[in-house]
Image (cartoon, rainbow, N blue to C red; front, side, top):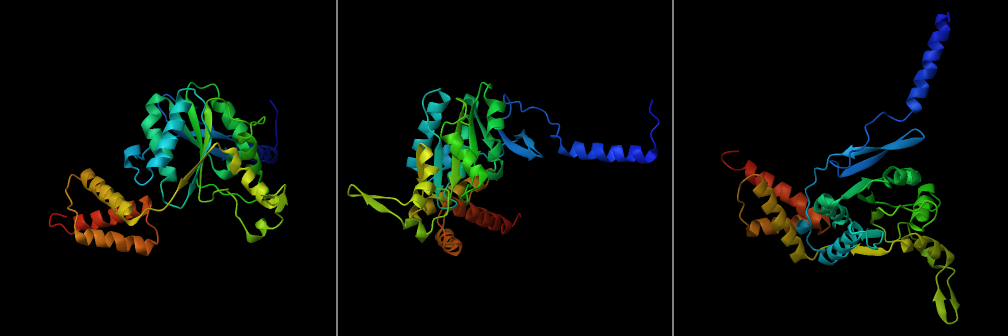
Length: 297
């Protein structure tokens, strides 16, 4: 055995500790038979898939005010599950209108039929090829979800996603679709100067090079699915459903009243948004306060 000096041993221990920090975390492989969802976790120069316990119980029937969007996404996802042609999808629109909830509801609806979801953060899109390699031989159908995605021009992850959607060497395997949610229709900020530089060609106005570049990514999604704010009547329908669900979960009955309706409307004014998220937040507020004021509370 080598007889090393204590200072050499200490130095080697420091080196080994540093190397160990760079190595991927030792985790169990995701058991897709029992786990319907996972996150990609970055670690040093690579990353790994980490199983996620699904706690959101949103169902398709719970989604109000987006019947057309629901129909489009259900058909596309069912086609995908059956091995039929299907499209990558960009779900865009105002905040809180159900874009992310739509994907969660699809997973809850079709997990038993083999649907799985992998959520990836924007910064980790550079690892798309590794993620694809990890699941391409699995007997399941995967939605790769990028939630609340926006870019600035020139970001590396922007180029990687563009390549994956474009059918390049980074393209997704046959059992993976990409679903993206965003508040921006083209995923990039737009400025007044982007409109400059347009020109007429054969009598037709052609967009400027700046605009062409900004729509080039969103154009690669086969589906654009727009989500909009609710009308007041649709918002109140959502509030009624959320209140009923919160009450049912606690085995109580909460009557609909004019006071409840007016408070819900005022809440939406204070939040400056009529949408599913606002309805859910108000229902928690109202039901919690109602139960707290009951004599048995």
